[in-house]
Amino acid sequence: MFGQKKDNPGVTQEAVMKALSTVIEPDLHRDLVSLNMIRNLQIDGNDVTFTIMLTTPACPLRGKMEGDSRMALAHVPGIGQVTVNWDSNVPSDRRIGEQVGQNFRNTIAVSSGKGGVGKTTVAVNLAISLAIEGARVGLLDADILGPNVPMMMGREQMPTPVNRKMIPAENYGVKFISMAFLVKPDQPLIWRGPMLHSAIRQLLTDVDWGELDYLIVDLPPGTGDAQLTLAQVLPLSGALVITQPMQVAASDAVRGLKTFEKLEVPIIGVIENMSGDFFGTGAGEQLAKEYETAYLGSIPLEAEIRKGGDSGRPVVVAHPDSEAAKAIRRIARDVAARVSVLTLQVQAENIIPISMIG
Image 1 (cartoon, rainbow, N blue to C red):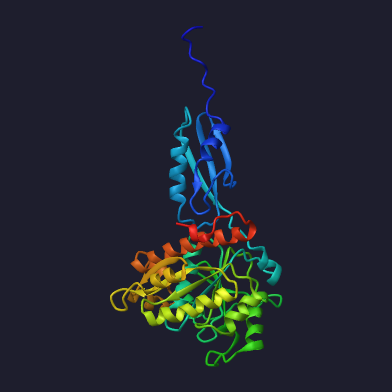
Image 2: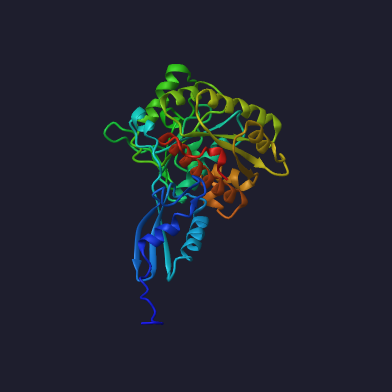
């Protein structure tokens, strides 16, 4: 009859998916639908519920994706209440399992060109930050020059082995193992060549790590046998280079960058530690710019960082609202996002290069 309104067919799955296909994942530069990130879509009348499957629980851009999704769905006629849920499936670098027989999805080396820049402190706090975000995290202390991870993590002893497998210590949601667990407290670690190679391999393969989203590896400072051994034994998803604001530290860091380049290990980025009035700022950012790699940010020099390391309560645990803790948490989320891109690059050649992120 003339003037009679047509029945509203309601919100359809096709309309919802079409709208969400316009939402672009900021890191991968592709839409959520083609990336198969939309899961468990349910429509109840005109109300819509769905899950966005992230590539890391530490995704720093979930707020943007949710906002963009809601804006896109607002154009669907008759749309009602929209509920967005979250889940994550961290991409896995299959090379790792094939080479070391462990279920590590990603491996991240933390390095520095010289000692004293706070490399281990950054590694410990990054590992805990990723665990806080919901990731399964392990930390391997491969620093033979100063295996300080147990003290910083507040666990000085390793659990009793089970079935001839070492059991990692655990605290703050992070499993960890250290060179320090293999020797007496006062025994120097003067290891090189085959002995170092054997020790690193043992800590990788003879430990019941379980399934990990990220294994963080704290390397000794400088460039030497440990870096070469690790690259030979363990496929690395990427490497972080820690430096200080001073030019002398940044110049040493260049050697670390070039070492990983020769070993064909991707550089995730540069982190400037101990930034502020005392040491200044800027050398880390300048280094990243000159080397054409990502600058992941600076961590301010604060007394709470030292106190946390000495007491076994790292700053992201003891002082989560401090500027240093906030900076580390932000960097950890960025690192996780970049590692996902790097791992996906291994799986598919059509992923946009990491240099285009952000």
